[in-house]
Image 1 (cartoon, rainbow, N blue to C red):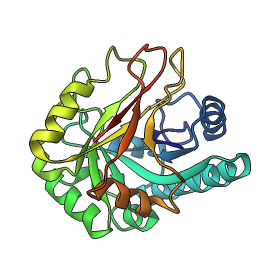
Image 2: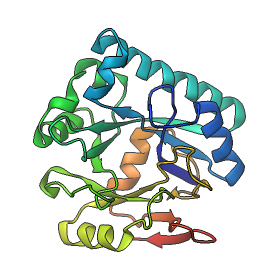
Image 3: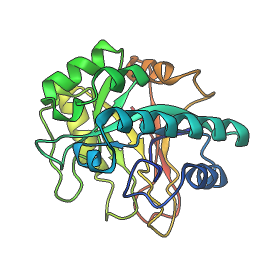
Amino acid sequence: MIIDMHAHSKGISRCCQLTYKENIDIAKNVGIDAIILTNHYARAYLKFYDNVEELVGCYHNEYKEAKSYGESVGVKVYYGVEITLTDDIRVHLLAYGVDESFLSAHPYVFDYPLKKIQKTVHEYGGILVQAHPFRCGDKLVDTDYLDGVEISCHPKYFTTSQADVKKVAKEKDVIITCGADYHGDTPYRPICGLVVDELPKDINAIVKILTSSNKKTLLIHEVNAEKPEQFSY
């Protein structure tokens, strides 16, 4: 079974062209069994809301509605957050293993320095992964404050940069995740993510899989490749 670890919906992520229903339906049609809904969470989004509490409330409502719809069509939806650093908007950080109380208690987490973000995520039992660290114009942050790096299969870019990600993961002893980051603005929907025998109960169980010493298997859909390939580490 496949868990796409990086998904969006336009109800929150303004750059996404798909509703959560559309994104879930497309994922199901290509054989994705579950998604982690990691909508964007950025200071720039405050202009669309009366206050930060409204942003947080809408963020959580979007997840709850997506989760409910996913259950109705047979696609499991897990909670995640993609944080954009205010100090450097090129840096996007995926928080896995946190729940709604994380943003409720830390609504200005995008303003925190990297070290504090990781510390706060850890306090909630989660892990911090840098999304697409080698994408055009992006930069790899200090890996001392990361738990992992992502192989991004977004078709808009010419490569997944998987060789660079694998090298960093090996040298810095951090985990690797994989996600489509699909926004509905490209010719195809990547088939990628974490491969599991059965879907974990919740996001905390996924974190446990990722941080264990057991072998992990990812399905990587290289840009414009005919089909994805498995990678285990």
